[in-house]
Length: 432
Ligand code: UGA
Image (cartoon, rainbow, N blue to C red):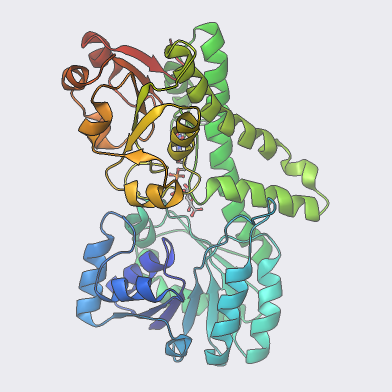
């Protein structure tokens, strides 16, 4: 099948490459000429394990091209909208300008019978409005949310847990086109749920709201553990053994960040308010607040451990990405904590295997260095992103570099007994 993918960021670039790898003929379109040039040379514009190999192979096979010209979408049977929906500058709601401009630019090249497939995360009600613009061209709209995780994006795209098709006018045509697109996953018995637009839009935002709630729940327990002497990691292990609860997404620490969970729960609140049911998801305000309090906790604990004043004290920050195996620093707890300590006068040196470039663009005044540069003569070390490069550090080697062996494990990810045995003063979040 010929497919077009509009928007070549974390979502679209992976979708385009993955669909080309299973034999479709795909054109990826983006307004950013630099990004398109990079992609056409087989290089990913961001760090995502496995993506460069997939891009190179798909481009070499002739199945994948990238372009800045929307006219190249003509002739495709399915057009995927994969542009970003960031938080608005002046509020909590999602900024839909890229979705609308993508549809504006695409519409002249959409033929009768084509299916436009929304993948971006949008407030419920958006698809209905878009369908009213697409249907007069004789084309149909499907809403097909994406559940990929950064760091596992290729795997999640090729082998999703489930497929959700939100359909309206032209439902049969939309379903048959999507079945042909996803024939490999469907042959592998991937469950498929067919619903209306509102349900499929809500599946995505409610899934992210649930995940955010799970993380903030365990971080709230970490707050309780901190004042009672309980151990939140053992608590998570114990409650997680109940299959109804499950251990995944119960890792307490500095909380969630990234381009999805934080802005999605805020946009959900804003949309619910517009719909007159703000009370239904008002708890998400608390979920957000618990999450942000974890960052305060690390700043406060660092200050306390440095005898109440961070001025001129060297703080080694290990990790800048919002999670390991990603170079994404959007709403990253690590970048936030590092900048706040620097603003308080600490001599922060931050390091990350992949995210220094993006962090520097966001926080140009922060000082970055190698792991060794960060550790050398540090008064305190903060582990804020659990990259293997950091969780595997030899504590004796690290102790030989720092001035004072004090570490805050912001992800409860270190083998703490080894660190304690190597004479570190170890502080996990939510544990003694
Ligand atoms: C999230 C969802 O997991 C995906 O299913 C969804 O498709 C995606 O958003 C999206 O909307 O596009 P992602 O943002 O890549 O994926 O990252 P997650 O793996 O969900 O992690 C989010 C944040 O939560 C990270 O900062 C991570 O460190 C933190 N986290 C995760 C915890 O603090 N504790 C945990 O137990 C798990």
